[in-house]
Length: 221
Image (cartoon, rainbow, N blue to C red; front, side):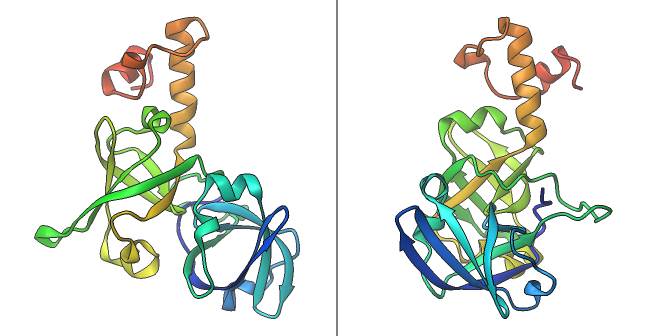
């Protein structure tokens, strides 16, 4: 489990293609202190397991399913990635609960920078839009963010200067792919609401997604 608060952006040292996927080697620097084999680390929002450690660098085995579901397969040596070590008992939760299970990729469709604001728009897969709600949470490349706008096809998040400086979001350009993880609580609520409204089957398309009216009707607000 993670919080979506990125500890550092670290460089990719090597990407090696293997029969089962890829082997990803990162230069973790100080984040390697105390890291053990088998530990979980979120890399651009994907939970990976430490396979080997060499000084301050660590190598992770990324299986084919993860390569296909995330943008990790596009990484090259020299790229920067967002890194967060797993949440420890008693640790602060400043973002939201992030599992490190990427739901899919979204393409950056627009970046607004007017009026002193930096807002990123992206288009997640259609099946993920049901879990998006204004002022709700979403993890983009492992970063805990608050949804500002939700349309039929796109979402937007406003990013503060600190987040731009401490993560890879400031390097994103229109057309880039980013990893998306929807909010765990939103998924639970939507599934329960759909079960109540349709006797356990999926709700019709016009009734999918979160709205304040639906939350109130089902006793969640």
